[in-house]
Length: 445
Image 1 (tube, helix red, strand yellow):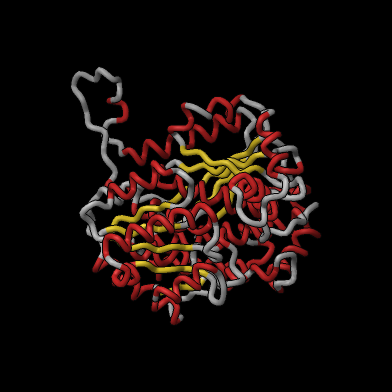
Image 2: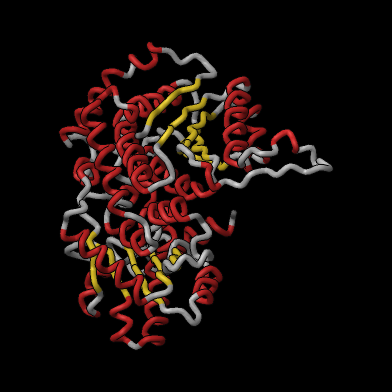
């Protein structure tokens, strides 16, 4: 179960919450009735992929085959086509899952940059190993992933031959149209669907995230069931839901002059959940010159870098702490040392998880005294079911918060600007106009 608590440092009172009642009730109506801005992208609300669907059965069968015939899965995608899957795998399997030799295939994420060095490094890791590819793109023309896939397709066909390469390449794409779908049909790749009514940043609980997660050995049934349970709790509780209270508090903070929300975890395995969070809220709310800037940190390591700013810097931020219930039975214990040269005998016999908890509480108090507001989101534990609950919690909070802010939470018009300039500079057909002007501007930079 996911719970929300607010640890105030400054004056946020009941009147602040009630002042948003009208907007909150309107947002709740949009969410329930699917009649707000961007309502054609609310497909994630009801979880198109369920544990009893035919699509999901095919996903599990494909994952089983990859686990049997491959040592490595390369996931080709950018943004929502990789962040969710990577976040789920790294949190539940640790960022070291590829080195731990658990018997699960190694999973690497490529096609999310133009770095040739990164792609070469991943291909070097594939030497002597059996490889499969899951290319994820609704259109098949997203430049970063399309460039990587063209190179990887050649690599696979040279290594395995065209026929076997086709059996080792899986496409997750649009159901009816697009360059990747056309290629998949031509070559005979197995295909999975990115639903028309689910945007990339909301797609982790579709084939986009479920196939890589299942290949990595994650209990995707539990992941989906946790999300379904969270959905039911939200619809039962309505505006009294912790999800709604968190969404309102975000907007209260914005109205009080806070411009940054920092997602905090004390678990390094949670780092890519922070990266996923940044895309989810950044693309959903950052429009019409509105919205909080989403950032993320990992404590206690970042307390030795950004902690000074959070404690004493410009008061532009609040922090949201994600805390999983822990079972520290396997946590290393600090041993007793007769010489006690490091002075740590006062914590001998304690587990590292116990120390981490005290660090969290001490930091919370210090930041409160320094004037930094903190939100705490407690969730069930480090398991797939609890993570599914948390993912859906953030999905719904993002939608409600965006509606309160009176923006469309499901479009992203701003991301097209850089693409237009890039295509013009690269000489893409249809983008020739304005190239000389751009080159002149670059020369003056």
